[in-house]
Image (cartoon, rainbow, N blue to C red; front, top):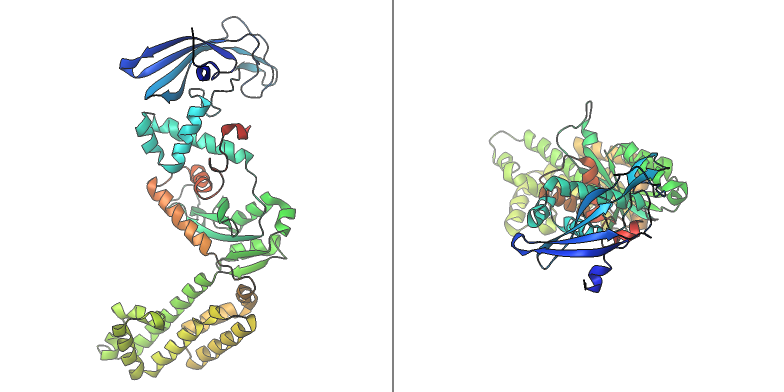
Length: 426
């Protein structure tokens, strides 16, 4: 029987003995016969198999890549032998069968896995007529294989942030902190390099222990929010690295304090007075908005409030001065702005802002670090948006391991762009 060369060499260790077409059913069958000189090894541990009792082979059917819109099924006898390593009866290892499932050829399983990188598993299963649960298991097994070979790259600058993973508790005694993921990203390559469960200190400790002490010493700067658990982990594992607080998180907390001060001033106004009406409701956002971003009507409205109450004028001056803090060119210039803002806050006596200032004053070094490295965790915030989109596409995840691996697949290195062929997994 004359066969195309690609088909004759597609199944190493076997020879094609028959080819059947079932066009009305949309399938092709290829029948194989094992070659006598093929390697005979355990499919689990790779040890050489020894002959077992009679009847130790079984009929196998493996689906391979479709051909011209027709499903391709490969039929052959698969041998079993005694494995000295496993001490069990094991099937022989066949190189062109997928590691993830014995029912698919390696190239077909890899192709389906690549499709699951760019589309939801349910959509891929629907398109190719496959069982959704089986395809999900294949995708999970494929990513596990990639993770087993994954080595966290060396980094010098990282960003750390948390992302909400699930709403409902999964385990008994679980706290809200356990329902987050800690996402570590490389600020130079803009890739996610690791994801840990929870936002506790232990989550970041896990990352530092995985990369080892030598790799930790090469990290120069870490950008995070003001989470105490992350700060404690960084202080222990990266004593020589610079810890930078993210400026966007800091300004968000400052904006909350300004709004609290606005509420206090509003409550001091006579109930039903014109000034009370103009400092609440839809107008509350004007008091935290940057002056240069206000519209004409907004500026006119605020000018009227400021002219009627000097306390609101003080609040506006403090807010505008603090908004220039991260625009400073040097640490010394920033120190002057910081001191000036503090003086104005305590002179005005705004309690929410005084509490905010006192909470940051002991940590001036972390504030000042921004002016040496100019890094933020904005990369992590952008990645968090990708993660939220990924979760919406899947209508949520029940399996947290799968969700973590999906994040590393979509935002990191566990994908076919960086591992283009299954042969690279060994």
